Length: 221
Image (cartoon, rainbow, N blue to C red):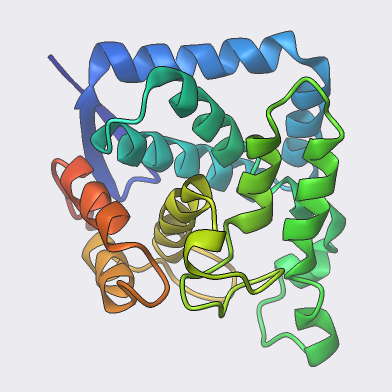
């Protein structure tokens, strides 16, 4: 049995219904049991609903990749929590910078990488949550060649979960409408990922993402 989920109206992604739904339910149960995490997510939604929507989409993409890679259920739940919380540090970046329609000044641009560090420290202080969840926020902008941030680590220094979320994060970011640019079509988003295979992103993860996308349906006005 297949279940279709529409993400941002850009394409449909089919996943096995029972397992996918159960993993998402388990993640939501964990959030409901943990008042600190629930408060953080509520603060994210209040601060900027785009961050919240983006984080939800990234979580669905991330879980689809994780399932394709046969990651076990326990680790899928940790990975999913890391995905939904990966951008919480953006609450500490002024909205005027996050939503600026024009080019950022050098001083403004210097603020953006700090969100990974902010998110890491915010999540790691929730002592009931796996340290891996905090590392997802810390490492989702690191790249295989060391060109990422905040630490510029590379290759095997980056946790596998960080590498997975990086792919999901970039794809959703480029296929979403922003105040400073229009959304790319899904196939264009995939082309961006493929152009950076082995340099910025892990080949196995990108291939898993491609396989997880069962069908891509263009949406025209």
